[in-house]
Image (cartoon, rainbow, N blue to C red; front, side, top):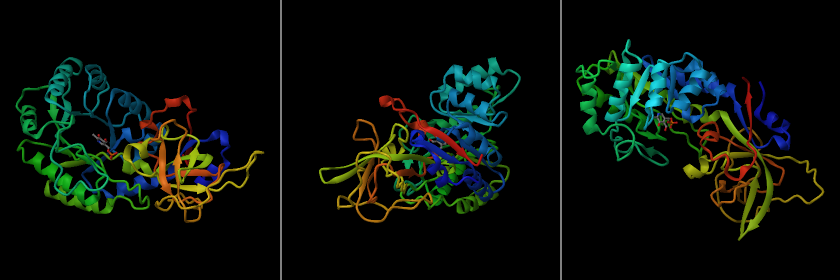
Length: 413
Ligand SMILES: Cc1ncc(COP(=O)(O)O)c(C=O)c1O
């Protein structure tokens, strides 16, 4: 087993920044999640969270399939994990994308609108005349009251481009059962209403979706209740309560014999297995506050800028300073407040003082963590940003300022 800290120490400065993924940690986590889920609950991994082929392959034993949201993801995932079931979702599917998905024999289409359903029906008639294509209309249901706390993000229950308005969804679902679309087969209903929810809120969502779907009075075999299980960036040790969620889902499946539930988490599966590892290039004071500029920045790890949080980190002190010029360091003088540095097993810096960790971009938005304690932080010290395994590299604006791309390391493959 390669230890993360040892690996980071072994990297040369020119090998920074790097994304380091611990695939053993990913497998252990995914196995625990799988273990918590009852029978008749399938798990598809939402590939958009992190589509690195090594990540997709490491998850393969623990998931029933993969949710893809574009033709690009579809081709990529089909290549990385050949033969695994795919569900094709996402708004604005093009005729070309749908045609390719039909040619590849994609098992399930999450249909986002009445227009998309008509397009799919016609393309299925032409491209896949001999089979009935599995369809789950996506419905934009209200998120149950009290479910949207803190950092959660609603995609349903309000005007959004996602899924069918519930007022229209009923007729679309019913049209799939009355012979209008002989080349399509209604499998069930899909909903992804919010992200960043705790287990109790997720159960409320699951109950609401199942109740709406079964209340339609048409035969359904499956209901996909979406992803969106929360990751706490302020407290990385606290994880989504999969045991409680699994118990709640078990009660739901018991109440609906013959129905398979499906979930499609992304972030809560892969966030924990990745670190964005870099080094401090410069330390300075500006208008009474301390700043450390690290190699890289939000063009590699955009998550803290988009979600507005401090990316949790720990510091690996590097005592060697190979340069003839003086080494800048934080002074630890007052200048702000912040949370304690968080967890990778690397030794945390001593408490007190605060510093803003910024990247190399020419924008004040290039901040990875603001006014966090890191007294004594010096140029040359290494910083390990945790929870960088999901919505990190692949959602970032890599080419802004043309800095080099990070390295990628997959430990314990
Ligand atoms: C349709 C759909 N399913 C699943 C997910 C995964 O969500 P999360 O990564 O929050 O679990 C998303 C994320 O946007 C989504 O849009």
